[in-house]
Image (cartoon, rainbow, N blue to C red; front, top):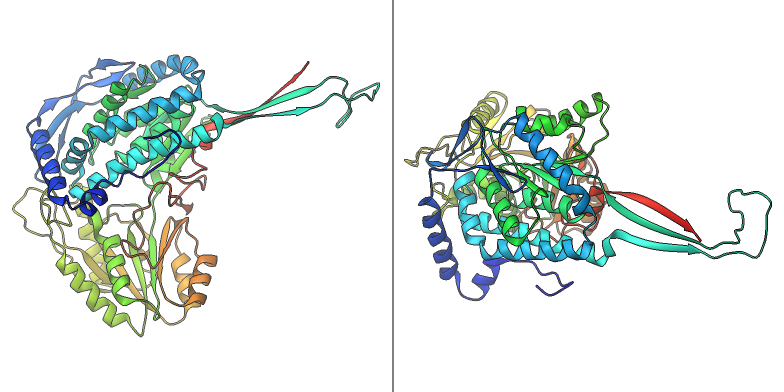
Length: 541
């Protein structure tokens, strides 16, 4: 990667455009076989570069078939405290490392990720049930984050600038605001890191989001204690690989520490420990706000960078390209079983085309192959856990009680020991809880509307504001949507997906309302400054 030049990784796109799709599949299949051959191993935590073991282990099982991926340490508060201490000790030297060295280092980390992308993608598919395309795309996004943030730090010269006020020949007997000075004054405005960041990664994007949050913290001079998802929805092996690739590239000991364990122990300690300056978290709104509330109640002055989910609408106008809308909505609603904070979970369709849209959408949903996500033809793999399946079952029963299940709603027998379900389309009233509560399963609500004014109000009538989509050829509807939709990441007439798939450097991925705390997005020019605080240093000679 040339200095200062950013290009998206786009692995699958490059292979398929080059007529090498079969090579892509061979590389993934080979990596998947090699990964499976390593199943069942026992793995340590890493604190200050050293292996650390707890008294108990956690068995991580693949949601595909229940096979044991590996045994990981069940870290406690004590290990979390050790990691925080190691990160605190490493901070002084790391914060004073020239930003250009940090930029060069994380470009090197990106290269290590790129070299190992098929291995990491295969692990990811085993861990959370993504298809090969989703997994490779996620690893690409992690690489993109590192290179993009390196370029941003470099372009902004470490977020440091200098100003100067010249001396004056005028004289005053006493100082006051704006008084002339006979001596020149030089001012350095710089952004300084906070200290130790706790990084709490989600199960659904453990590589891209976990890496993006960690690198955002470290490249700006903070040190990190990284906690992967370690209970119910486990993605501890990808977290370990992130550590190993960082280590291979030369990230110093203590700068990135890997601690697996339940949120009630490791996560809790990161929130309440006074030596943790900040938390970066992606997950549910209840957990995000709970962490913030607990920290403030203890009088702690932590900074929080938190993304907290969505309940994302798509509007299909009577002026829409129906085929485009069906394709985009189906992909956004049912890709990775709807287990994305950006997934489309509500679609509003003009009454004049509603029945035709639903019929076409059902045909599209019926075409999705469900099964082992390691098979290249499969579009929908398993739900992440039994708790996710329980959420799905309960939501289907509620839809039957208060509305109609138009398609799906059943478990699928794949002869694999996992939770496989049909993509599900339901029709309920707008005030139904299924329209307002985030579910994180492949259930899409459908409602009709008469006027564009009415549907904009319906689309905005939730506590979240992450992503939103519109399909319309009418300029006024497009302009009204852009002016009034209450969401941070907005797509109009998008073919690949109505609400998902933000591309680093092209889109910013950001939530409004209950989807975010700071309203600043990842993969954008405004992301890195969140990990720093501003300081003005004035020197008069």
